Image (cartoon, rainbow, N blue to C red):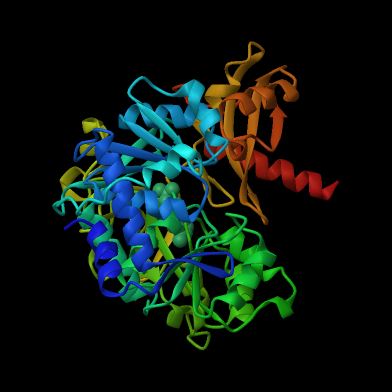
Amino acid sequence: MNLALSLDRAGRDDPGRPALGVGARVLRTYGETAGRVARLAGALQRLGLKPGDRVAIAAKNSPDYLEALYAIWHAGLAAVPANAKLHGAELGYILEQSGARVCFASAGLDGEIAPHAPQSLERLISIGSAEHERLFAADPIDVIPRGGDDLAWLFYTSGTTGRPKGAMLTHKVLAAASAAYASEVDTVLPGDPILHAAPMSHGSGLYMMAHVMNRGVNVVPESGGFEPEEIFALFRAWPRTSMFAAPTMVKRLVECPAECVSGNIRTIVYGGAPMYVEDARRALERFGPRLAQIYGQGESPMTITVLTRGKIADSDHPRWSERLASVGRPFRAIEVMVADEHDAPLPAGEAGEILCRGDTVMAGYWRNPEASAATLRGGYLHTGDVGAFDADGYLTLKDRSKDLIISGGSNVYPREVEEILLRHGRVREASVIGRPDREWGEVVVAYVVGDAPAADLDALCLAAIARFKRPKDYVFVEALPKNNYGKILKTELRAMDARRAASRVAE
Ligand code: AMP
């Protein structure tokens, strides 16, 4: 079933109900939104796009995001939402790899993409431009039928090779993830708002569908992003608001003056990176029993385990602290297993790779059969995360896919930064690690063998990769720790870095 049908139906059955909000006001009803989406879909069809073709969205949060996404589905096409914080060259790679024929881009971002646009891209539409506006004048079309296994969303996630891979999320996958959200994370009643302060290309955007299906309101802050004061004002303006927030965002909200918080919040869902127990406790004190945690990844979007509101708030439970440190229990519709290196299940208490199977798991990686076969071998998604179950079925993550750095909720794969640093003639070797940081979760740190000025390295990074991936610290060393095969030992490097930080504190 095509996901676009839920919006189309809401437009017919409940036309006067608010669908989209900007800041504190209602922007459009379901009737208006569905009408615009049907016309935009008509325009995409008139551009010659055929069912299954890919259309990218490289945009900051805005109501246009939802309309573009639903119009893409309405016309039977597949969406490629790309992180607006990426560098033009990185976006160019995603456009090329996905074979997108059209791309909607935020004003400003189109200029950054243009020099990197691949030949396969026929049209780059700047959101809000006269060209974009004209598309809404096309004749509306009916929803093009799509099956559950048809591609809906290509979710680009970095791989260990540093090149992003497109996780193929079908209509069935997104419908299952949305149903899991509405039944196990958060109740969504008609009229309930969801505030998109985190990128709509990722976690927050994946909650759009549950809110359309249940006729909630998708609200975008006026600033398009995360400004704590604005968020609190919107909590007051929109009763029963929910929001997805990376742990660093929750921490920033907690640090705001107590009088900012109102009782209007429905649920703050956190996930995507580890939450320190101390921070979870403080958030609970501040917001009350309105927090839920999810653990997921692009390959099983937002849906592997959930730590429910009730469990987070159950502070009288003897194992409450351990539970706060966990990522909760598997969603009901998904099988989760902790396995040894032969994919055999391990008993509670033993750590191994987390595998899962169910309707929320991707169909594979786009145009990458080797990576698909390896990641989905034996019918299970191999998450690359290491964890252990306790006797009650709570899963605790022990480590992340080894060396992945999560800074401020965004993923940074060391290799992509290392490759840039190694472009400098005076860098012999480079190894990038995450250093624990109270504010960002982790910050990117580069260990460098060579004598390149740090300013040069910064400039190289700024020219090629997103700002959030740039090292916050460069440490110049004589040699990097290596094993007998000459492979750099990152675990040892992280330990060295911790010792270095400890000796600095002691000074
Ligand atoms: P992404 O594919 O960008 O959503 O990143 C997914 C990765 O983020 C997972 O494989 C985990 O390593 C990490 N992650 C997601 N949720 C959590 C969580 N609740 N706690 C700790 N790490 C998480």
